[in-house]
Length: 162
Image 1 (cartoon, one colour):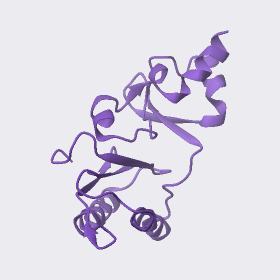
Image 2 (tube, helix red, strand yellow; image 1 turned 120 degrees about the vertical axis):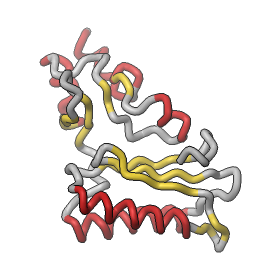
Image 3 (cartoon, rainbow, N blue to C red; image 1 turned 180 degrees about the vertical axis):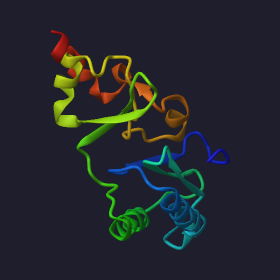
Image 4 (cartoon, rainbow, N blue to C red; image 1 turned 30 degrees about the vertical axis):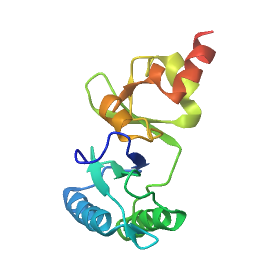
């Protein structure tokens, strides 16, 4: 992705489980092929895609060359849905938040339980969260993972501390 502009648009998809080595290899092959052949209205897109931390798919496109269309974005979604069906995984659930614990290992909590997790001390304002709402490549380079207090989840800090 280093060849793309820092302003490139990104989509981050979080898998509901850790992918196995063979799945990672197959998925990365599919993503490479997809990115190299991705088109919008017949025009090639400057794109790249990768699997990160065995849980995330990141797709980037440099819109300064050609912007993706709704149909082209749908193709990327279809690719991940198809892979998920074949490998019994899901890239479209939005209930889990992944973070690094004190041992630097990946853990998760349910988004709906954020306040309780803060109150219990399991997560703090400084807990490193994998923020899947980032939408520019430059953000990913600086904020992956990022302290909870710098994400959209910070609103739960005020509620639970107050």
